[in-house]
Image (cartoon, rainbow, N blue to C red; front, top):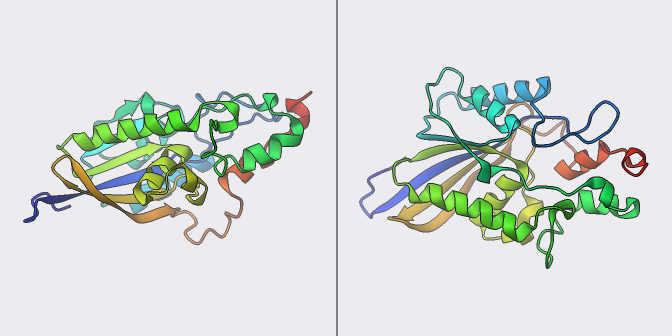
Length: 239
């Protein structure tokens, strides 16, 4: 990236990655604690495919959520690189409420349309963390990163909703636009940010939701939240 442009504008690049595949339910269909779920073997393979796509890319900063699935994905991307890593709790995924607290007749809509509902007054993700508070948390952490002048290329590995907030910020869509920014497992987004000193002039989305293990999305038809709903057994939740 150009660190010394003649007009004083500096272009910085962020590589935004969602973690690889995990299972949020056990073999009996019961929800697992999402704070602790690790990558599956499929998720590791996905991260390794992305690592190949990024093998020539230098990073000045490497950051991730402090959840295991994010750190495990980052570790795969940094194999062979002596790169310091920052693990940040403020990059954690939005916190869902308890699925069993959602009445069964409302469950499908509230899960599959969770992102479409984000801009509503007082909206919360699956009756858990509020969207406004979550957006403020993520953008505060991102602005702190932008305030640090000592990097040009940053790798950020986090979560579906985290990336959507940043992409929606870059596009100017805000919470109203979250549903449009699908984030498949181990996907890559490339975001350029033009800055004049500490001031952000504009953001450019160069790449969005690229999955090197399936570039044409042949095997990816469901949305992220449709896929989640398909793994839920309402009978066990409301038994």
